[in-house]
Length: 396
View 1 (cartoon, rainbow, N blue to C red):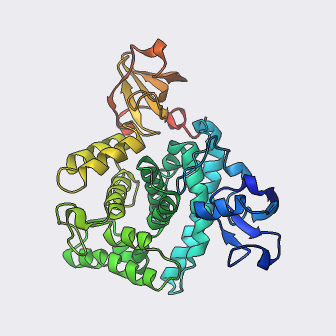
View 2: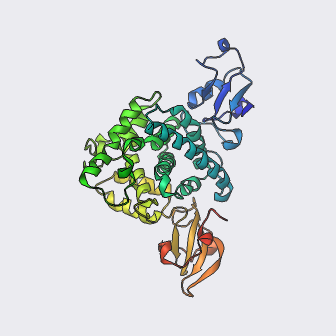
View 3: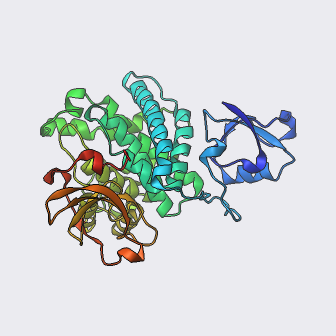
């Protein structure tokens, strides 16, 4: 949908349909383009332009990005006002569904031998970025809800969201953050050229099958090299997400600083999402347990400092985790809390001492009146007779 807005309302991630002046009157090569560089935004805002026309179907709408007070830092990501989990939920659902359609179409193109159109990814990656900046936990948690037969599509979306969330924690500049998200979307694109009977095999792969599966990295790089508009950042994510810090990874066996920072980030994201996902061949472990595994493996397999920063980005107890409280009750994590990673907002659902379900109610563990309560550990939902609707933060 086309919409006229003031130049002062422009934000990174919007698609400019028309600058509304003759071509000779502005300094850009085209009048229609995705606004991705802070320098381009500053040039427009410093120009004599009055209003511009944006296309909200190709990029962000004014409603997707809230004003950020203060002067922007060149190249930095403008942080919009944060929204509570429930307030962001409807937008996040819409973004998830839109992204799923785009990813499914792109991966189908690869499977059919057609060239992918990477420009279709940019608007949805911009919307994902905006949602994560408003509430980091909402979209990432929605990505955990996946059907087994769409696991490759959902893994692509989840990896995109996690890379953006991770990059935000590391304060990457706006362009790199966006490309990290695109890299997360496309890092496994080579799997579309792996035979289905191997890709979706429910049991353990044979040595020969595993060799074919490992080949998805090189197949993906071949596809991306033939795709116009793919950046070095995207290539690094795709090339290095299976490399390991101790040199035990593939395809090149790179170690330590030989792996780019984006590659080291992608390795962490890929493994975290893989072990916490519901797939044909395994149920997936709880997010908190997944972070614990990453921490244990970081001594050799991953960059230890980056693992710690990833845990800070996700939160010790990610949204949707089932936790045991010191008050001998079970609760599901609803929202992270800036006042402390160990004290999120939770929904209490079960009394352990009395072995009975409770009428769900919410607690902010960072509130001083709940200072005597806290989280003592994470729990496996399947081990308890819980009503899924009471535990699901996406229902209420």
